[in-house]
Structures are given as structure tokens and as C-alpha cells.
Image (cartoon, rainbow, N blue to C red; front, side, top):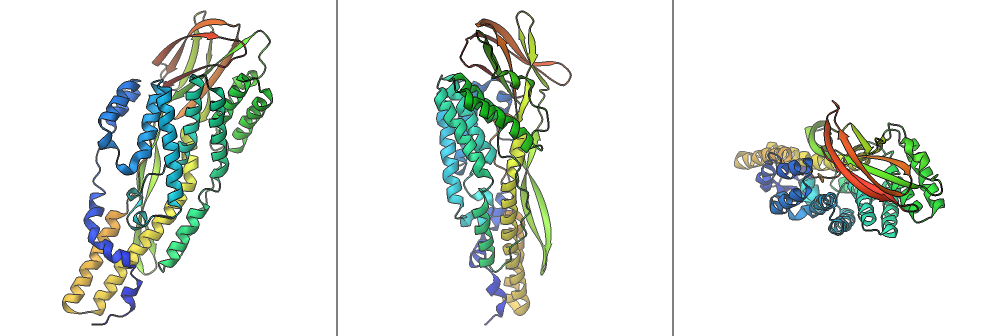
Length: 445
């Protein structure tokens, strides 16, 4: 028996993949929130218990391909638990793994091209990669290693400069792959990120440089912070913190107390399924990850001293907005990859259907069954990769006050929308002239 040209349009690896329809069905069987117990502990502020639960359930929460998620999740929880050395080691492991995974992704592994992105190693989100350095910088500050903290801030700034061009080679590889499989190059939905500098990184850089007496670089970072606000209005939709103008004008004989407060939890991902009509095909299904907020109860953070002096912290960086903005470039890449992959799956089904029309009897029935199987495979295997770390904060607030050197007791209150107090943190700090006196608090409700 000799068939006409229909089967020549079927990529060889897709003929083989039809036999894995069951795999595609199984991939859609996730239910519930496996992190619920850890999430509950974290929202209650019991970070040590969160770490214990995460370790106890590690095998259920993280596959071998999810090592980066484990490093990031535990790295953040150990930071909140003030286990700073452990946090640094975990976050650095995560950073190295993200770099290695991105390098590997340049070659576009065939497994993710065939099924979906869930089959490949998780390679981290851009906002995760850049904020690793913020929290490592804070880890080093708490260990009185300011020079190491500044190295982390510089690393973050270098990553931000690279962000605009990061995905160019990956897009080119995808387009070449599409053409090699006999398809066409789908249009690229251009939506370049506006985010190229971090006010949070610049703020910390300003404080660290001030602490080591490098006022020139401190001024540069202070100015760059204001430029960051101006250049990314979709991220920085709120005014500059009013305390910024006082940070580099500390009078002789005085000391400065700075407070940084984190709140809320970073976004998670949900799936958005789209069906796109194409010539000679009924439609193709693509599944895209979409970031979804985890609403925070925190509306205001106030610092209150024993003598009644008080001030509010002001929003410096909406880290959730940064997560969404930096995801734009990557989701464009995911869109391109999904369209190419789904088109090839659709071509496979159509070619098998055409082969069924060209044959008779049992052979025709076989090709009809294979065509149906290819359609089912395409529908069930096309799923969005919803993996993302869970314990970065959503917002960063800052404030400061100039004081006489000495020991001070004060409380930091987190308030909800109705004015109710969500959490309070008591502090006693010896504020020293010529040093960085930085207090960090976190409430992830």
C-alpha cells in the first residue's frame, strides 16, 4: 500500500507521541493546594513551623525538576526565621540553578516542545531571580557584612540591565524550530517590559553606601531611585516615600534609624486556555500561565516610640507589580512556543485524518483512530506551567527618622483596611551615629 503526501507533513516524533495520550490526561490531575499547611503557618508568622512542614512534605511538594522552587521557598522562610546563613546558602543555590536552567533552555529541550513546559526543569521567574539578591543583601546586612551586601545589589542591577535582551535568542530558536517542522512563524505579541531598575535595590544601595562612608555612590543610588520611579510609571503608580530626602542629610552628632517592612505574598499562577482558529485546522488550543494576586490584608504600617513619636512607612516597591511587569517578556515566549507546539499537534491530527480519507477498510479506521487520538492528545497535553515560588513578599515599605544616638524602644504595627491591628513587633535598638541602623519586619497576611 502506498499513501499520498499527507503523512509527510507529520513530524516523526509526534507519531510516537500519540501513544502517550494517557500521560497528557494524567498531567491535568492536580487538585487542591498542597502548600496549604505551609501557607497557613507563614500567614500566622510562624516561620519555623512553616520550615518544618515544608521539610516534612518536601517529597510531595517538589519533584526533581522543581529544585529551584525548593531553594527559593525554603530560602525565603529561613530569612524570615532569621536563619540568615542558611537563607544565603539556599538562595545562592537557587540563583546558580536559575542561571544553569536558563543556559540549558537556549537549546529548547525537545520534551517541553513535545508536551508542555511542565515537563522541563523549572527555570525561575525573572522577579524571583532579581529579588534573590535583595534578600541575600539583607542577610549579609544582618550578619554585619556590608561589602557582601553591596555585591548582591550590584548583581541585581546587572540582571536588570540584561533583562531587556534576555529572551531574544530563545525567540529566534523557536522561530527556527517552527520553520523546520514545516509550519510558519506566528506573530510575536510585543509587550516589552518597562521595568529596568529597582527602587528597592537602589534604596538599599543608598543605605549601604552611606554606612561605609561612600556618599558619592549613595547619592547616585538615591538619584537612580527617583529615575526608576519616573521610567516605570506602570509599576510605580504611587508617590516617592517622603523620608528619602532626609537620608543623606543627617546632621553631625545625630543618627538615623531606618525601617523596612514587607507585607503580603507574591502572586501565584492560574491557567488561561485559548482556542485559536487556523487555516486548514479547526482550531488549536494553547494554555497560558496568568499571574493572580493573593490579596493582602495590610493597608498601613506604623512605627510608634515609647514617648509617643510615630511615623508611617511608605510604599517603596510593589513587588507584585514588578513580578507582573517582568513576566511580560517571558509570557510572550511561552505564547510563541505554545502556538508552534499546538500547530504541529493540529497538523498531525489533520494529516492522519487526511490519510484516513485516502485509504479504505481497516487501514482507514486505524488512521481515523490515530487522528482522534492526536486530537485528544493535543487537548489534554496542552497545559500551562503554573509553578512559581510562594513566599516572596508582595510589597516593600520604608521609613526613617533622625535621632540622638542612644537606645530606643518602639513597636511596629501592621493595620488592616478597617483599622484593626494585624500584627505588632516590639524592638529595642541602639541607634549609633555613622552606622546603618536598619530594622526589618515582615507580615505576610
